[in-house]
Image 1 (cartoon, one colour):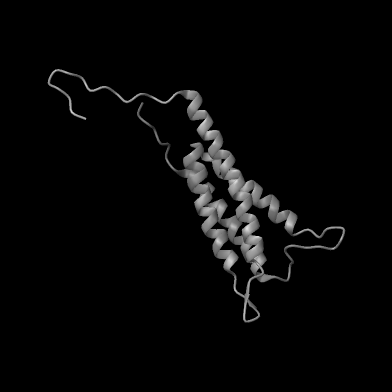
Image 2 (tube, rainbow, N blue to C red):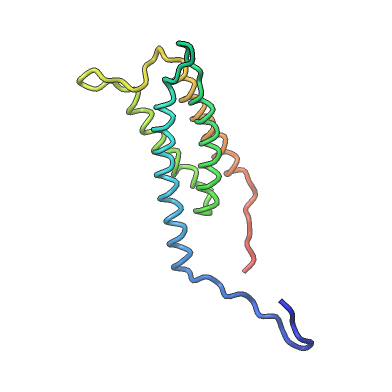
Length: 143
């Protein structure tokens, strides 16, 4: 933007508080839904086999998704506690998947090493990302 001599540059208009709140709320909802979808995808991939052997691709997805969702939640909501938004539905779905129903159905059995590794890797990823966000110095935005 060019400014004529003697003319003050104008500051860009500040977004309204209501719009900012609505965008943060939408980001939070997206983070929750994405955490749920990530857990479903990981549960589906926990049984993937190649040549009759489990390959563990869901463990890598759990780590990658945990990092991406934690980052997204923090950027979208702008609060340090926002890592809880994708982590909570992920943990709830993993807990539900590991409990046998009255009909005897079980999504994630104890003898499936991939499922156990996926739960540990996902939980550790969310824990590390949350810890990093808590220890990060506060960011002050100008304006």
